[in-house]
Length: 214
Image (cartoon, rainbow, N blue to C red; front, side, top):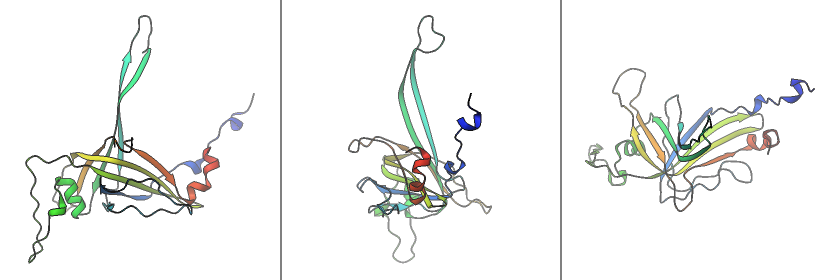
């Protein structure tokens, strides 16, 4: 019988963390992300229209998946004899700390393209609509890790997402800044044919392909 030490294949160098990263949003008229890195394994420039939401809370971007199933039970069976997935929804929660044109528009649901500062004072006024329209965005989140061979990029791209919830906003002089917490839900992009795509790349990723089983 083989010893346990010969059966196991534990590789701590394959444990990933997102040491830093960013979430970018763009209008749905912007090009979709089709590749994260080029032949040199470096990050490619993002298509026009993608803007970084900036600094966010220590929690970073939080992805969640809500899966609902339909189960068939049968006479004499002590467990379901058939199970079908009827819903698989991805949500992204970000608590953005920077106050800028993108974060204000994302939180309020206002089309900021028509909002301009006062010519004299620079003041900006944003009016919450009585019935905010459902606005859709392209959303790209990139997490960056490090390996001996270089950076590792893990990204999740939502080609069609909208704000479905907003968190509380506090005006306080504590160590909590004025934030813009929102939850985005991913929807199917009928042109692209998917609601979410994962990307993995970078020089560090390339160096570990064999170790990861590719």
